[in-house]
Length: 181
Image 1 (cartoon, rainbow, N blue to C red):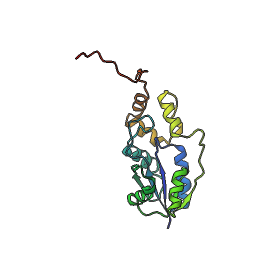
Image 2: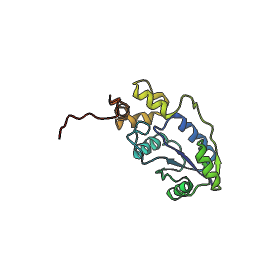
Image 3: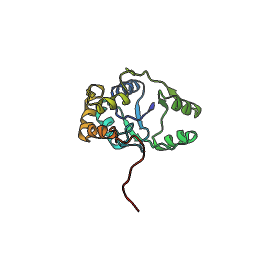
Image 4: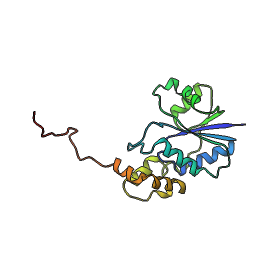
């Protein structure tokens, strides 16, 4: 029995993630999806909460027909301890799939089998590109599975991303005040 771990930020979960997970599912009996940087939300590069990302992933993967565990993983900012942290937060796993060089190095050093999945349409499928399309009010829906579109609409994620990407108009970095003492 092979239980595999795949970690991503999923900001948002998109068709590239979907493709990779389906490829992993052909090799593994069970999947653990680790939501990296789970503590991050409501920022231009990390607009969605861990819970919202859990919704995106679980709705998108309902038809997978494999045991699936979606686990939020907070950053601990201590790379030497991160693999132990991940192991403590997840069910036991036999291998990890990642394209992130740091993640690959850390798990390799810990003696865990690491596989680099083939990335799917990496040039067009990235969370950064999708968030930018949403912020610019351009078509983005084709880059994510339909259940993810519904989750983003349900949580008003489009408005959130656009609001987070607005310029406050302050070029100086200092706020003027007219209060006098």
